[in-house]
Image (cartoon, rainbow, N blue to C red; front, top):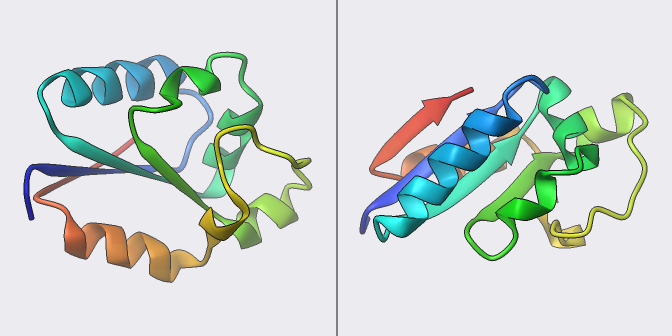
Length: 101
């Protein structure tokens, strides 16, 4: 575990906070991993979402994504990054710090 920050996002209301925290952590040399679940999957359709490209790794809950009928493709999320809540658990286990938005 080398300065890794995990961020769980379950809301579609905090894109500014998500981007701000992620950019600050990246500037500080932290490796950032984000997991989108519940309504957080809607952030993939926010115009600012692509600001996260290249500064973090993003995974999301495929069940929530499908339940809310969000359209693919997602520009900065690869197909292999659609997962289950087990992916969220793996992120928690792998990070020094973990926050929830």
